[in-house]
Length: 578
Ligand code: ATP
Ligand code: MG
Image (cartoon, rainbow, N blue to C red):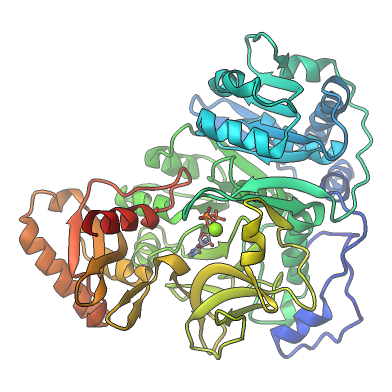
């Protein structure tokens, strides 16, 4: 099968078709970045034209449902129609110029996608935020970004009103609501009266497109600036390689979408992952983006939705898979589901094998950051090696390097890094706008350091050790929390766990595990259970890694996006015992 596209990327040379290895294919097809690029014009409008010409499947481009089973299905033509009207609202009613910033806080409602596209068309820089931001977060984001416009709904409007007077740059506010609000423009009414004629602005590939905030797993979220080509073309590279995958055995596109796929990605609208999966990656391939307006992640809603709708491709966080396997998905039939993925955190091999047993499907892991597109992944057709997130994505040259940026031999633990010299990948963030000093800190030698530690094995598979700050140094050993957590979750008493360092007078630091028990084990004698879990870890992994300290907790501290905040547990541990 062929990716149905596209005028934008062309091979650099007429390279031979008989590649013997993936590296030579990648070099031969290293894309040239066009000087001008705009995802709305160069991708969405192409699909709209294909749709009109009958050259695309009959699936909607956006298929939205809510808990009352209300549905909205928009074709590319309808997305184009509504988003052009909204682009006119931004330029005319809100008087925004190209480069002006728009702060968007909306849950998973169809208008969220329209604002994304309208900003591309109008050339305004989008700053998405989650609905769970506090007034302090909102004030901080508005002030540092100097956003001129905010778009939100009633759940957040009062918070914006409370801080708006301290944001002199803010000149317009749009509200998605059936009731009006003083000082706010009515988004739906303004769109209704706006013209649907709009000429997409002409953006250069490196014009600013979006400002994302990182998840804040290790500290305050960083304000990360991306260009138009970064996410928009970064996805294309991955897809472009698909065209040639018949010549190579080691690579197929991670999400593996076509215009016949229905793709449900569950991440919150505030995160880069949603833009990446539910806007750029999906629509690059002309796939149908499925969205469920689920105010809270609810396992039975997820399982019912997978069984009720023709969802072919599903991506959620490892935390969510841990919850889903506890619900026994084998009670359901998933007639269309053929490809399951996860990203954002490491997934425990035990959870992968449970999911496989219960659904007959593998989980394909992806590894990326707010700062990047997909860095590595297990691609369809590749052997799944549980515990490894797969091989390097074609977007980057990824190496394991030491702290000075020197490449380490295969099999050695080091920093996961992306080569930025002599070619800086265009699908990498431009800078941290806040805090700016962090930008320089993450470049070392010829590399951008991801802040994560890992190992590349002889076959090119990457194995995650942990975030650099999370690695435990005990009596001369370096211990990655992920491996210990994987060992713990193999025990049926463990629903999930977080492993951190804890101070120790002799060893400096020791391994401590915070464990959430499965319901059947909650009432068991805790002293015995600790002994049993310690013996279990010694049995399934190198004994020096076993947790000398174990504490049972009801839940683990997590970010809004569901990532475990080991930093919080570690800080408490050290503050408490110093
Ligand atoms: P912050 O940078 O604010 O502390 P964050 O790093 O969690 O937060 P994101 O950009 O959302 O913010 O997440 C990227 C990070 O998530 C990666 O650097 C890595 O640590 C982790 N991650 C993503 N995917 C995986 C994966 N498949 N396996 C292991 N870790 C992953
Ligand atoms: Mg990070």
